[in-house]
Length: 442
Image 1: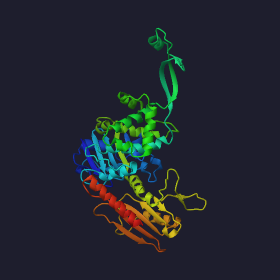
Image 2: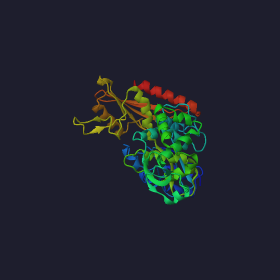
Image 3: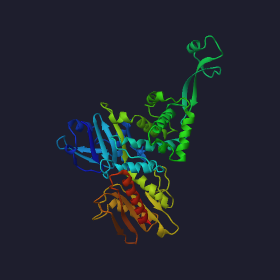
Image 4: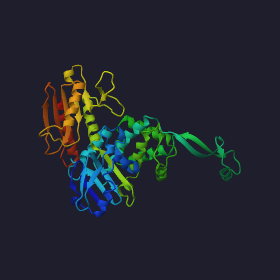
């Protein structure tokens, strides 16, 4: 049993054709296959999937499966969807690469993660070791830390053992006799105070120090003024920080944060635990739990395109926060959320863009649901033009235009994913594709 590799959006792959697969791997994968993502995440604290807010995802990925299996060990077939990353159970580890992987490295996944979570840093090195999927975790730390601190610094009641003259709690007689005989004016007591210096904030501090120790850590923690301010806040309140207490802090965070006000700290806590425990997650053997790190590539693709289109004046509606909707009716009861749209004074200059992370079968016709969705958006905004932007590799159709009866245009616009096998060259190719997309939509 060992490490298996497959690509996303595959259909009917023979299990027996996976390199290194055996019956033990088949039995282990059956504990992952054909089960909803929501069930797996709820049952397995060491399984991370992004985005965290599954129920707010319009694609309802919580109802999907990471992979589907059918048949017995001799004739089993595996199918995958838009989920990519790394997942394991017992001795079996399965890596799901994006179908645009170049060579041995999944540069496309890493590039999108960097652009979405750390857009201000461009000099991070790519990874070449077998744990590369976990090396993207620190890139997401600034995003989730800033998001959490918008709710304020996490504060909770802590128990303190003190020994001074300012008694503000219950006197501890045993400790007092041990520490203060002969009496010198101090009294040992136990107090319970609401404090910022608690296991959750200590966990964040240890994560900051861990990232600092990496060669690219400084770039991550100084990439913007927001993250610099956030790091300062955490350092200022963690007076009791001690590096030798790291495992103790991890143990105190085994139970997830469950505070109704500090809701954003729960995904941050899970991320910090994964960063600090990445070796254990990668090489843990024998545990009857599913572990790993996964991304919804459809969501990641949409957020990546947003980093390009926002600079061109496009609005990227936030379904979860009910922001940026366009409405079907005058009473604003029926919101619709295009992926991106631009509204100008001249309606003829309005534009709709929809992101699709899937193979586009457009040689004969466009998918009916996609077509109906775009026609609806064109009518509501209103707009004369809409684009459907999808990623393509070497042999897929690049673009097609559909002219509607009333004069609107729907353009299926391919976004070429670089096929370079060196990361620096790959990034250059992606920049060229980004510029080409901007040019086409103008």
